[in-house]
Image (cartoon, rainbow, N blue to C red):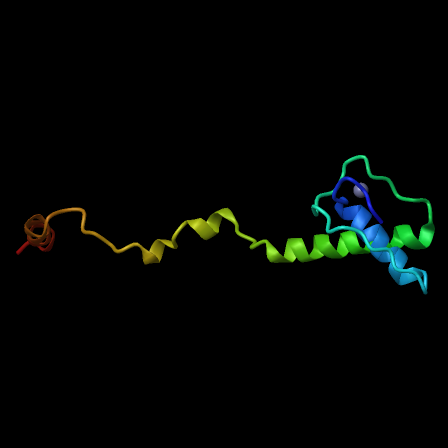
Length: 103
Ligand SMILES: [Zn+2]
């Protein structure tokens, strides 16, 4: 089928569905731009619309599974992983130890 513009994604799905559902026909269309056209509407042919809808949802499932799930806590290192630094210099710690243990 010759048209002046590259077919949108649902149109590609639509013609793919026609080729699968109707035996003995093959609609050949140019490679599409893979974007959905916002004004696209279902054809009203139930079997074909179900085919398109099913492919869209399959794609959405694949897309959702391919996106890595990260939560805010994934970006914060666990507290135990932070090396502990003494708050006071070692000489001061030594003095404090002596005071506290009454040496
Ligand atoms: Zn289209």
